[in-house]
Amino acid sequence: MARYKVFENPSNRHREKVKDGFNWAVFLFGPLWYLFNGFIGQAIAWLAVAALAGSITLGIGALVVWLIAGFRANKTLATKYLHQGWRLVGYEEKGVFTPVETSDGPSSALRP
Image (cartoon, rainbow, N blue to C red; front, top):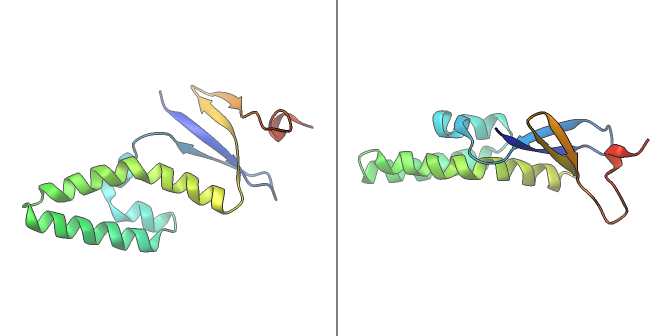
């Protein structure tokens, strides 16, 4: 089963989940995932690298590039949330939420 990192926006307490591991949407749809998630520069860069690698290797290189992008995409999204000020509040696996312990005690998700 998939494991997710759970991020919380401190201003409105909205939560988003980011899957750990491989991102099939990136592998299958390439730069579209990056565009829809606001990574326009990365979408263009990955597309350029895939086009170059694919042209040199008769398409095999492009598959390898999108395979690498699929492994990196979820980490990129998690980093985006952290840079925007969101907090990692826990992990979710099989529908069970496990809060992250912080230096000031349990996660704020457990506090009233």
